[in-house]
Length: 573
Image 1 (cartoon, one colour):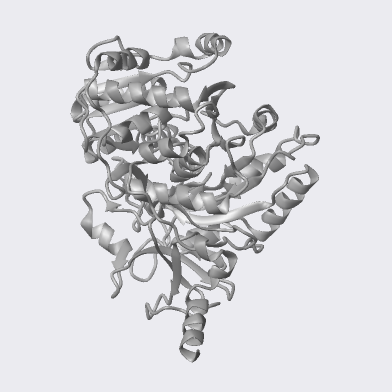
Image 2 (tube, helix red, strand yellow):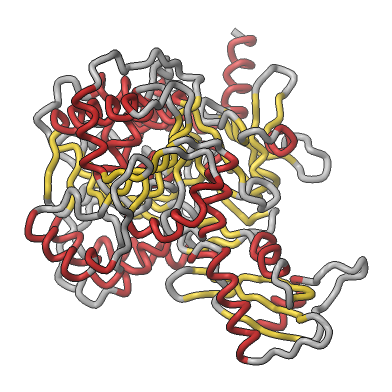
């Protein structure tokens, strides 16, 4: 009896969050199949329900799987094989989702990139991932045509946001925007979506590849531990694990529900939490290709989503929308915040707002990163303490280690957050050094992600995020690394030195501010300032662009000669 009691106490200390789960819910079994196969199995009796909603054009699961099947045949007809990388450079449209699952079905790998990426970023991503096909939104063509010959891409598929729109909206889009967009002449190198899909009808060979949970499914992007852009490889098992966890933590979601997909597909939160997770629960995904905070009220009243995931800036837009006064939110079952932490004051403000609008849910925070396939912890099943980011999801483990001794800290002590479980990435693509810096195997063979974040866990097993060890900004939910911006600015011929800090922003939370020292003899004329700004716009994604550019004679330095960012932050305040 004493041995049993000792074992119980050991588990109680090591896994204090177990109290929130029934015994059968504490761990999950990850299916040994592809994303496509798992999604198909979960919806085999749900074919008449809505899978995708795009400007109120509703696509049933039956039609959705038919389109995936046709797209997979079109991919094979153009020579795409298992293991090939196909880049998707798209906003949230049905074509992007269909292509993602079709790529997965044939055993290829999807590389997801931001359609607003700078020209050189697109080129770099295509080269580093060895992509052989690009599926891109038409707005990206102008950038793509300049660099595509420098890559391994032999076929580019151009998609218009209007391809899946209802007829009247399609006409409206063409009149207001579409006719102004530069597009290629049809050729064997550049195909339009419908022409590409039509080639699938002629391909009759087998397309479904034998795929395991450990095989790569998608490449997403983040700065890793250093801020230099990394290609993060996530497996089928990683993403399906999150879908399995969702079954336990979202018991109210079923095939009559819908999830608002405002967060983009190239973002882990958008792909996994807004699309794959809800679809595997039988719910529909409401695809919003371009979010306008001023129209948030119209989005909610038009679609009535029961599941609203977002980053803090999304909820800031909710609070500041002047048309929300009389909007009833009684249909909303879950409101999820991730991507960055909410302050207690903001958390309380949002909860008060939701209650005033008859919402069934408070805002529930979660914690995670792309390297952990998004959510690691979540305020599920009554664990949402104010200011916390919840408990580890089923089969996930979190430990806090002392940043000096590297030994495991006690409950309540602040240290580095480390994560283990089926959600741990396969690694950074062809970057063993950086992979080994963030992933560490313990003496029991368990792999831990060293997040570079500080936090603590209380006696209930609830995690509290404190701050980041690494120098990183969160801009509208996106990770932005000042070191990357500095590297780009300092590559300009007129720049001697540069320091970038984050400054507060009423909507984006933070934005970059660049302090620049010019080379000797160069004056900060209007022409020079404009040239540097234009250079940044060409080489940085839009969300990375500095909000302010300050030109100085020198920058403050630390005792060892590095730019003193803390001093710059003090000066800015």
